Length: 304
Image: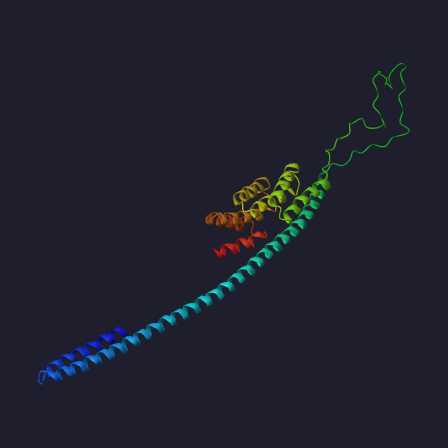
């Protein structure tokens, strides 16, 4: 805009200069030369003033722009420092929340484990056959005489008599060797302690050995679940899905199945399989609507 003003002023003076030349023809040469010189001086003065003004404006623009830019940079630095602080706080709070959630789940799992163990023990006691009953001995029952040279008492026909009141001749029923429940519990607790300490690789190995050693234990579904959860904590999401699918296949009636499906959905989301994660969440809601995992599945579905 300043340049346009300068152009207009120069044009005005050019017109004035032309008019002066035309008018100068009416005067003598000395007068014309004098007026031309005065006009040139005035034009030069105005041009100098305009150039000085333009230079001043440009300097002000430069200095003002740099100051504004510097202020903006300083504000950006302050905002960046605040954001970094907020990120650090959020990171710490997230880590603490994850730790509290893990501890809460471990505590809940321990309580459920005790209940499952008690139920399994009660079911085993109810299903066990009663011990054999020995009939009482009748002291007045006749005893067959010993045959001379024979190995023992014989009947009238020479055959060994059937005992009327002695011990039963039925062989005792051999019971299967009971599982060492204490050792089983110690193995599970040791594996769970590894998970609590963050030794996820060690927990995977310990829980895997537990499932192999006690495949029929009521704690085996939980052990298999923690294998998948430990894989997820190590960000090996494909292995987490495989471990939880193993739990569902081997223990389809376990209470851990909804939690396993929820862990599968989380792993699928981390792998970018949004459609698969949605199907898994819908499966939880459809097949396990009363489980504790169902509200979480509904919440995730609502947020998608």
